[in-house]
Amino acid sequence: MSTSKICSNCSDSSFTRDDVTGNLMCSSCGLLQEFDQFDAQIGGINGPQGTFVHVGTTGSGTFYTYKQRKLFTAQNSIEELTYTLGLTSKHVEIKTMISAITEGEFGQGKWFQVLIGACAYVVMRKDDRPLPMAEVASAVGCELYELGKMIMRVVDFLGLKRPDFPEFDIVHSFERTLKNSQCFSAVERSTVDRMGKQGIFLIQCAVKWFLSTGRRPLPLVVAILVLVAELNQVDVLMEDLAKEVHAVVSTCRTRYRELLEKLVEVAQVLPWGKDITIKNVIKNAPIVIQYMEKKSMLKPCEKRKNLDQPGFDLTDVVSDCLRQDDIYNYGTVGETSQKDSQYSLLGSTSDRPNIQDEDRLQISPECLSMMYDKFLNDVRCVKSSGTSEKAQEWERLRLDLEDCREWWSGKSELSKKLLLKQLLEKDVGLDTMPPSFVAGQLKCKTRRERIKAAKARIKRIMHPLDAGLGDTLNHDILDETCHGRKRKKRRGTVAGDVDWEDLIIETLILHKVKEKEIEKGYYNTLLDLHVFKSGII
Image (cartoon, rainbow, N blue to C red; front, side):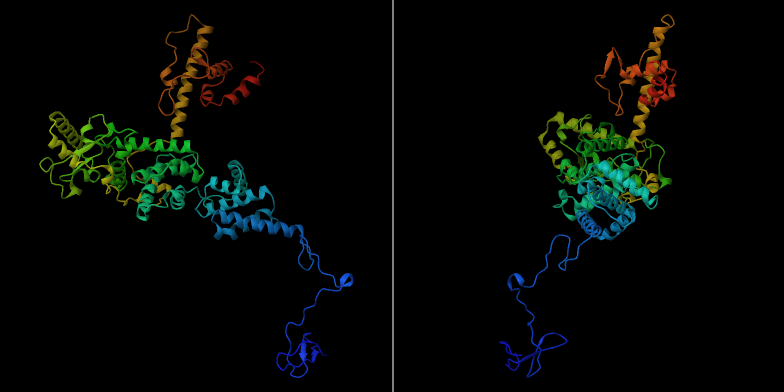
């Protein structure tokens, strides 16, 4: 066989076809030739036909089935969502859970995306590293309630219970938010670590104060992040943090105010605690948190039943305030008064005992109060004398809040994650009831007053001669809200001080409904049971 091609070894043009490989072989030297299988697709209409490739087939013409296409699409959806949530390492576990729920069929469409998000949430919750539901819902692109319903269905199908499905870990949520937030990306690492320990301490104090009970945890996380940022002079906006964690800004502000209110309650044990309010508690927060930290480190046998008793050890709390030649003054000395928000303590060598052994020193609140009153008198003397040199000396000795950086030690166990049982055993200077319980008790008290007033009105109408003049409504109790403030005006008033709720209570009383049931406030249910079904309105 002779061709125009020559052998690359001997330059001979005589070749034979090898029966095994089908390649050309040189007749002279026996070398197999390479790249001789090209067959030009020419020949016009009678030439060889090619392969028509279209959607759903391979190059060989094999068709994909519906199930194969569905599995391929589901696999891509799982990979995309796990990558978006940063759960690439959990991809196999999430896929296995979805396969068990759908019996290996997987699925397509919007519902399947929601199922992937629900399984991702459950997997992380099982590992005690929960994701916020709002973040998962945002990544999936569905409503929060829709994702919650799917999560409940997944939990019920798998039969997950404690300890396989632990409670939401708010401490981990705080650490994750602090680590991933762009608001703290430019902050020094040491400051972030310090903020982390302070935040964990305050988070667990808030849990002990029931600020997270029955509520969404993310607004509380945002509130504590804003507070520790202010304590460490880090500029951050609550709106930016709330947007990152998909929390409502108004709810974050409410949690922030509740946290400040609790700090004000804790600060009442200090000698100047009666002057601390929500407006100035941030300036006093270092001392308050230091007191809480020292209080939590006390052993149960060292705790006092009453903080107002003389002899309570506040040495560690105010040791920095009693140093020689130092004055802790939060504000301007010239504007200090008993009702102002600037406070300071004056200490001199002649006015106090030697405090070399701080562990043995017992300082009572009465003693600290006397020091504080003495300082206020000295300030008033300086203001009345008008001596410029003395005022300049006070100004030189003044220390602002940003100069007091040694108030945090981080030695308390509350700076680390604790179990709920261990947390409730700690004493941070304040024991409170859940806000929802307090609000419920106040509402029941208000309804009792409404029932009393409604019975008095019915009595005056049915028995005008027997109606007493003392059966009147206590407006002070009725107008109270769960925050202890009074409403300016009652809405929905029908006549005088009677509104729609009073009319409903009167109707229920006339239909012989028990007062204990009316106090619970389920008016629609009671109306359906005792009024509308009775046929008499």
